[in-house]
Figure 1 (tube, rainbow, N blue to C red):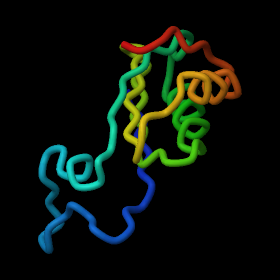
Figure 2: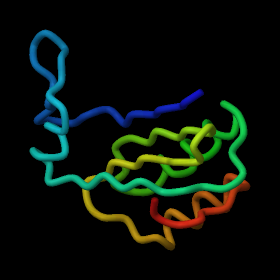
Figure 3: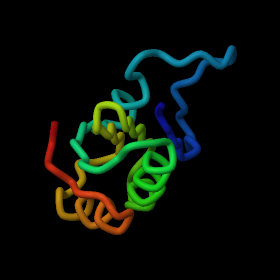
Length: 101
C-alpha cells in the first residue's frame, strides 16, 4: 500500500502535451532534490496518508510517496530540506523519523 501526494506543477511542467512525463525530468528542470527517509511506525494506508500530508506541508515539497510496507518515504522538493523540518513533520503525524535511507 502506498500513498502519494503531488503538489500541482507551476510553469515549466515536465509533462508533454500527451500527459506523459520523462523519468526525473521535473527534478532536472527545476534543479530539484529527491530524498528517501526511513520512518518507523507506519503500518497502513492511513499512516502513509498522515505522514504524506504533514511532509507535504513543508515549503518547497513537490511530492511525497510513503510506503508502510518498507517504512520508506520518498520526498521530492525544489531544494534540499533540513532533517529537522522533516523530523518535525513526521513527529506531528505521530511517527518516528529514523533518518535518511
